[in-house]
Length: 147
Image 1 (tube, rainbow, N blue to C red):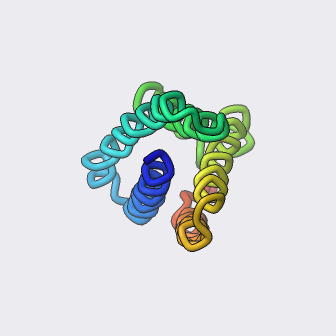
Image 2: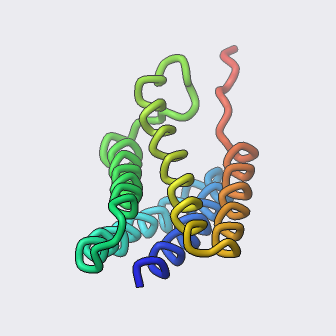
């Protein structure tokens, strides 16, 4: 059960991020749908419960914890503090570094933990992460030149 939850959560996470990255320049749309992404905390927390209940490897709980930490920092920066930390790396690097570490650790965790139990599932997850990162790079906000 946990493996299926992890796979589905990883798929939904990657698809959400792909959609968010594709519409990030349309702030009205992003504000309408962006909050839905945080609902993924519910199955992630349930997954940690399943790790304990099913006596599974602690790595599942660690990666789900990393995912929850990523959601928490995303919510804190974007929705609570409303900090634009993505466009000025030199100014905001202290905020950006922990965010990026959690982002890449979360992506890595979804690939590895699925790959452990299913080569095909892991390959699908890997492909989605690559697509997600490429779309993120292509649509990433750039620092505006000061005139």
